[in-house]
Image 1 (cartoon, one colour):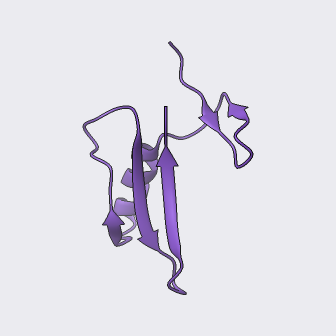
Image 2 (spheres, helix red, strand yellow):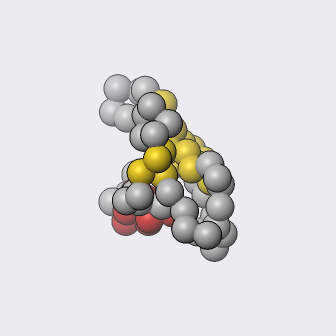
Image 3 (spheres, one colour):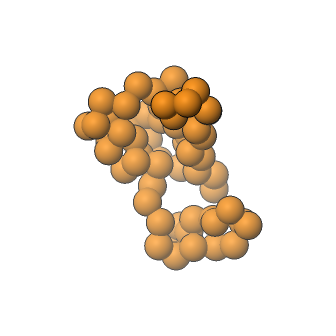
Length: 63
């Protein structure tokens, strides 16, 4: 079954980046992560980090 992403209104997206691809990009750019998805899994996962102003950023993937 093909996966799809969701936008901020929960409408389906056919083209999206998996949270693990974003995780690799953040780590390659030395972004400190508070919580990270396992790179060796699939399915639901999330990443948490802080922006320079201290705001919490959550990137979440659900099935």
